[in-house]
Length: 315
Ligand SMILES: [Mg+2]
Image 1 (cartoon, rainbow, N blue to C red):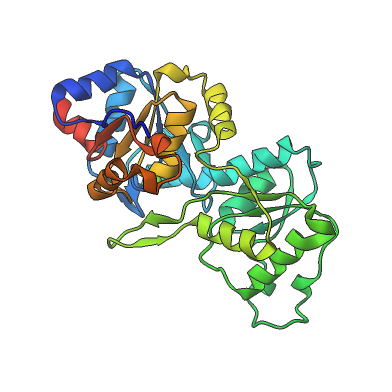
Image 2: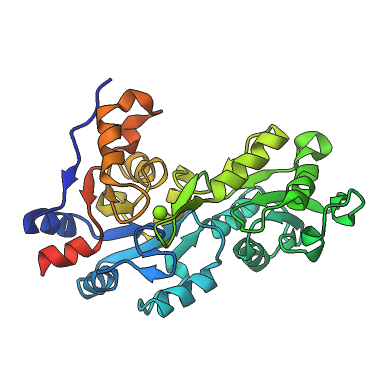
């Protein structure tokens, strides 16, 4: 197997300058790149300011479906990054609602949601009626006669993403829709992420763990609307008017973020080590590529400790 050259480490002013002059547009993952839970990663606010001052364009692409674009705007502001607009943020609760439209599901249809409120909010904003979600019946003690287990025939699609309220009622009711009518109701999964880096040094289960749980129990595949979906990237590039040869994807997860940049942006990918991937993980991939599916697409072109590294280097 041929593996491309090792990644370039951003460790000198020259390498940092090279990146910042080569690219006009930046796509940032959020968890592990911009913040860890509710804490901004050091140097990020200064780096974003630098991009603005130097007329660089940027947008945020997160596989996290738990928050809507409006909620993200408040989070950016609260963490000290002002001026971020809804049009600059792409969480997968939003890409899931775009997918409902792309599937020609008539506006006004009911959509069954397994996931946190971001999905309900974006589905509603797109013009659909979310059901399931945080219906109080889903938090009742298990009872086979719970009316939530009865199929609502007006439900036209199922969207699954991360939730901290995963329980047997949610699994069982979602399963009814996934099996219904010979498994013909579209099944949209917000992402394939196994885990995400949270605060307190913890790695926690992410949306992909919920999506794959449902995929396994229903024994059917899902439409993945998160990174590394090429369709998702194309929507963003067109929306933002970004030329892909001048666009760099920055992320902390190799099988989603880096693959997204490598496959969709012809190798324009930067891995930061401020999130879930640490240097030994990258080293393991480089030394044992045969242990991975499509290792080539997971190897970043550039690596930096964090976005703050750029500020440290360019001064
Ligand atoms: Mg991340």
